[in-house]
Amino acid sequence: QVQLVESGGGLVQAGGSLRLSCTASSRIFSLIAMGWYRQAPGKQRELVARLSSSGITNYPDSVKGRFTISRDSAKNTMYLQMNTLKPEDTAIYYCNVVFGISTIVWGQGTLVTVSS
Image (cartoon, rainbow, N blue to C red; front, side, top):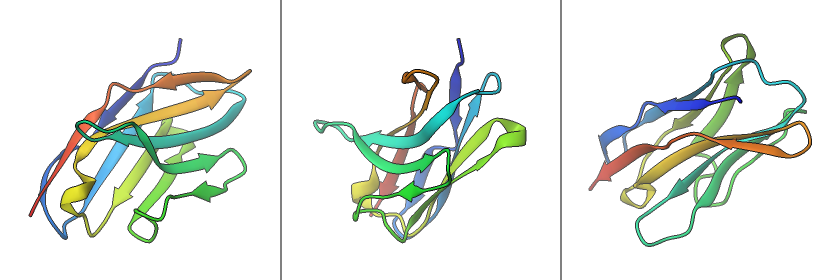
């Protein structure tokens, strides 16, 4: 079973940047899509970035223009570049991949805290 490990979270001041990484334990075949989600205290998990196998990206309006999802297939790693961070971006960030016949794997999460 593929495992995902996130890294790169931490504490940053408002206006700053962070880059999150998500590395898979092995190459993923029949990839459908990969994405980043976040969950703030008391709120539901929400999508912040999605990258399909064909290269199409999707972002909600709340992060559009500030966050960028990308991947390095040679390293089995995907990234989330987060710029101009706001206090409301504070959350646990999770990566996931969808592959095969809709198999979904989640990472363990990494905490991002943005101070005002």
